[in-house]
Amino acid sequence: MSPTPPDPAAYIRPPVMTLEGGITLSRVLAESCPKIMPASVKKAQKRLIDVAEAAQIAYTLRKKALGRAGEEDSRPIDRAGDNSWGALRGRLQAYTLLPVETYPDAKRAGEILASLFGDAGLSFLTESYPEQYAIADSVLRRIDEEKFAVDIERIAGKEFLDNVRVQHVAYGKMVAGVLQREAALSEDLGEHVRAMGQEIVDYATKVLATVDRDKPATIMTARAALRPLDAFREATQKRPRPGNPPAGAPEGSPEGA
Image (cartoon, rainbow, N blue to C red; front, side, top):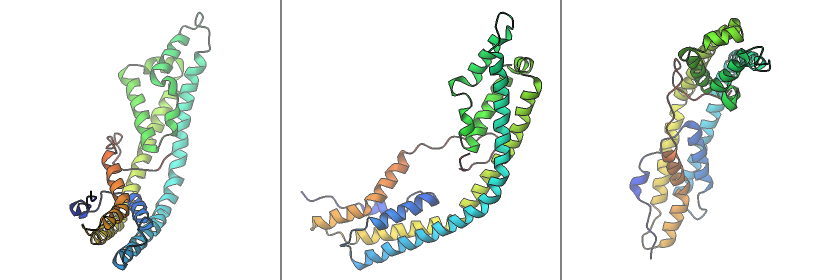
């Protein structure tokens, strides 16, 4: 039985992709091009390589320009935020070491630690800036909504919780700036994404033109050439949609902390 030819309708539009995804897909498609393909496909293959390289150069230059100032501004704020949580949790943890018979709040300190931080402790401080902000924000909301603040201030000291709040506000502003820079990066490089999409569609069209229904070998060769594109589409369709951004911060996808 002859293999089924690829459906041309599946390749008339470029896949939904980020700049990084487009660069990777373009390069993998070019590398996967069967050597027996005709000159028309080889030309489209060369254009894939060229457009991916142009996008990579633009991305690297833009990232360097945005990241230099961004990281210099972000790291001190990130450290201050991390330190504020470390100091607060450290105070509560130290209190749990006191004998409960003499210091009843030692038990309460342990309850607060378990409720707010659990077994994960401060591991959220290693997440990306927006993720860290969102988790920290949820902890602070719980402190207020579940009336932990009075006990925390009595046990750990008011200044420790106050410092967490002050640093959290600064952290939120930093995250908003990071996301805005990332949005500018995506906007500036959008033309490269569109260019790669056009070349991917052109390449697929040229590959499909080589198919002869009466020659199974041409069908198999075309399928091999288009397999990276099929796999990319399948992977992106299965990928879960991102959740809502942290409160007070615009949407985006920043660097890890």
